[in-house]
Length: 128
Ligand SMILES: [Zn+2]
Image (cartoon, rainbow, N blue to C red; front, side, top):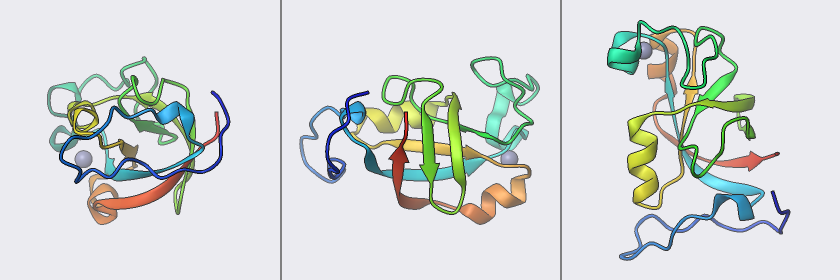
């Protein structure tokens, strides 16, 4: 990852968003949602108990992202969450990436915790 000075994420409302180049930034404004391993959050994947890279999904130290934007094992520092490693993915993250939005999904211990988090736009640090 190349270290450059802070820069804003592309504005998602632009008519013709430029391709997102996450790796050029150290800090990015991201859409941050939360999920748990339940059927509501994970649908057909809920029974797997594993993230998309085979990690135990019940360990709440990971985050889902589009691995094309934020490769697996990328370390993020998320305000009021802390350090999280990209270890999972989801359709919503990949869909939003196509619209120029960097969307991450924080894995939480319970569905109520995930619901309580809601939807936030946060400045997220990309550490490595
Ligand atoms: Zn859930």
